Image (cartoon, rainbow, N blue to C red; front, top):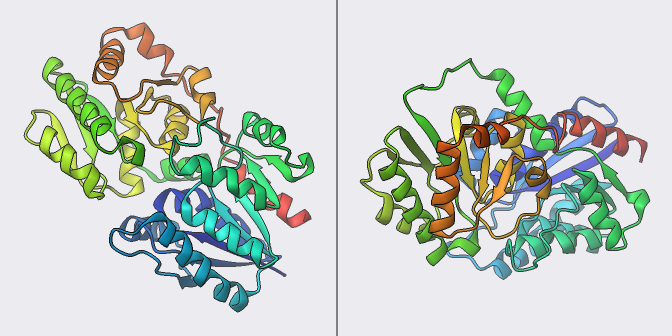
Length: 361
């Protein structure tokens, strides 16, 4: 039996690792252990309950107003005890968080193999998204297994000198989670008298003037289009909540709500006319659902969605956002061209492929 330890702390990581945890638990060859780091505690708990995941250990590393360096240091300090406790032959991390990189580094220092799920994404700009672009590049140096979601991600890794034998194109596990969640949902009709625009925004590079520009754009869109309803689950970070509530609070047909559980969020996506986001996961999920996506960033590490026609990178300029949303609202052919469902990020079988590779060693 091979002990596999999963280390994660944020809601997106949990969503994307849940299908793989479930897949490995069905195979008696694997002894699955779960370590959470303690970020996104409330939002993480929702996902853990949804996918019936009970952590074996909680590092509890988060502190108020914590610096990234302190977070990384806490993971590096606490994870070695967990590695000694469970003695895993493999540690699995996902994506590009600071805790994922620190967990990978601590595992590498311990002489244990690292598997990186969602490897090879690159924006080409180490400062955007920050610090995620650096984290995922650094993880690629210490990982033994690189599970790339697309051929483009694989090509990025090969250009950086990663051994081709260690890179496996599997699709993205978020599509596995999405399919499983949609299958559980009751059928729900959208209100034909309202066109729903779903918004998410929380990236550090958007703090300050960029997020204020986004909010002013949303206010303009709501005022100019009476059949539009904007729903914005507002991140708990004060640097997001303060400008959003100040600028958009009280605007007609703009609903500012607290972060919602994953099932509710998927329901909102399926009912949306279009989505405005700086989230990586949403850029993967929306094309699968056939929902047009406008990316509120200057770069994206998921260009496959843009090439497939499902997404457009619009940045944070008020003028650009209003123009692109207005085009989607007024040009039916343009909206239809961005609404075709795509499998560019996977077919829902990524976890099974990863499990088979790990089983073979």
